[in-house]
Length: 161
Image 1 (cartoon, rainbow, N blue to C red):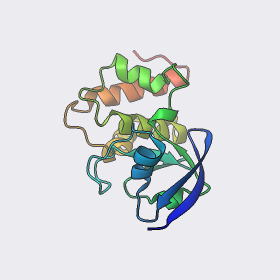
Image 2: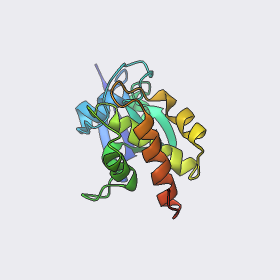
Image 3: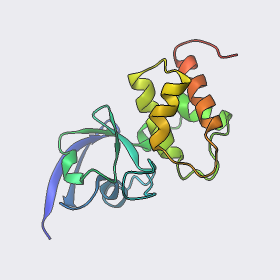
């Protein structure tokens, strides 16, 4: 099968790759580019484990074709930290133990980043609504929401009681 040339920006870096027209962005990220942080949980856009940010929009990468990445800017979990320095979101997830097995964690962190980029002052209800597309079987979500609300306040320069 013929492959298609795609040029995109991934985690702030120019990227060029060849992919088959039916390959999902998730498969391209994992199998072609080697960014394995995004996980395939369902393959149908129901779990959020494969969440990435495409041109400032939260996307399930299992529902987007790799060829659709042409000219796009994509942020994966690997692009959230600054080198070896964790992003404040990642740090709060650790502090609040907002992860257990870790399978859903990349998607939750990417979704949280997309939320706070769009709305740096979400209510708890807004945060819960935004993250509703990310399923987790381990945490019960309370620690996730507390981490999100705390990091939002920190990023705004406020303190949480």
